[in-house]
Image 1: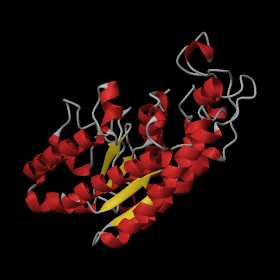
Image 2: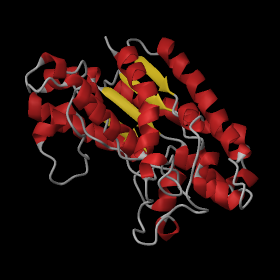
Image 3: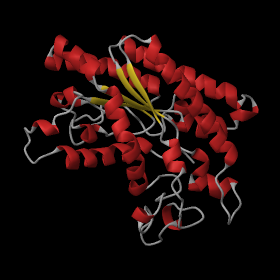
Image 4: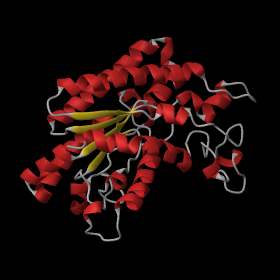
Length: 307
C-alpha cells in the first residue's frame, strides 16, 4: 500500500491556518503579506502550503493546462502522488519522478522570466520556499513491496536515498533556489494497511522493522541537511520532522482494513467521523491528525527560513 499523500493535507491545513491568522479582512493588509514571494512544491504528492505563509490560498499544479502566467510568481506544485527519489519508484507506477519535476522547474523559470522579467524572476526564485517530501514511496514501494531488501541492505538503501536528496537540493541550488524545507517520512509501519497485513490480525501493532527503516532514513537525512547548511553558501534549509508528531498521536482506527467499503458501506470512499480518527482510510491520516502535525512544524518552517 503506497504511503499517504502527506503534502496534500499538510498544505491545505496550513492554508487554512494562514487565512485565519494572517488576514484582517483587508486584501491589502500588510498582515496578510508573506515574507516569502512563493512556495514551490516537489516530491511524492500534491503540495499546498502557501496560505499558512501568507502567499495565496492554494498552489496550482504546474501541469494544469489552465494554469495562468499570473499564478507563476506566487508558486506552483510539481509534486506527484507516488513519486520518489529512486527512478524505479516512479517507473513502477508510470508517473513523474522528482528528477522529472526538476526538469519541469527549469521550464518554469523560463516562463517566469517571460512573465515578470529576468531580474524579478531571480528575486522570486531565491526568496521562495521549496518544500520537498520524498522517501515515503521509495521505502514502501521500491524497497519493501517489490522485495529489494533481499538484494540491498536497509542502511545502504537509506544512504542512497539521502544521496539522491542531496543531489536534488544541489541541482536546485544551482538554479537559484536558496530556501528549503525537507520533510521526513511518516512512521510507515503505523499505517493501518501495514498493521493489518503484516501485524497480528486483531492486535495490529505498528510494524517495528518498517518504522526502523523509516527512522534510519530520517536520521541520515537530518544529518545531511545540517551538513548542507555549511556547505552551500547563502542557503537556508530546515529538516521538518513529521514522523514523531504522527507517531505520538494515538491511533483509533475503525476497522481491519479501514479503506473503501471496509470503512463505511454506505459511503465507500471515507470513514464516518474522520475528525475523530488518525487515519480516514488504510493509508491516509485525517485532516485532524495533520492539523496536529502542522501546529508543531509551521512556525519552525517560517522562522528558520526567514531572512
